[in-house]
Image 1 (cartoon, helix red, strand yellow):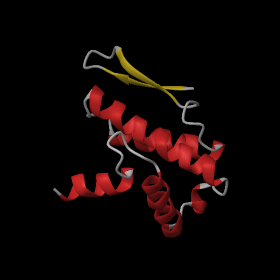
Image 2 (cartoon, one colour):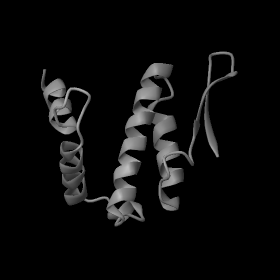
Image 3 (cartoon, rainbow, N blue to C red):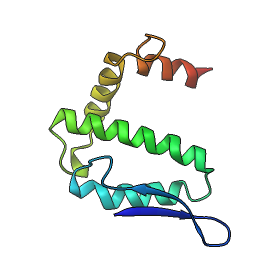
Image 4 (cartoon, rainbow, N blue to C red):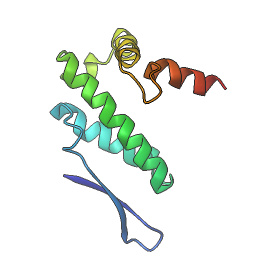
Length: 106
């Protein structure tokens, strides 16, 4: 299943493969709806960067093995996601989540 974004003339401008992030089945439709609604007016590069972030989060969900339904998304789980990001090295060698928090604070 692909999720197209159309240009001002209605032509397909960008597509995202909803099977690519490997989300649990119950997440596909809500994520697609949220992503499409939130990024309808975003630039293609913004959508691409956010899609990459969604794939990263999907990787965390798959690695955790505990999340099968939207009800499994808890505050504790998001805390674990930050710890998971902290454990991943960035290109600069600094933890990903710490670097993201520094950029957001600046």
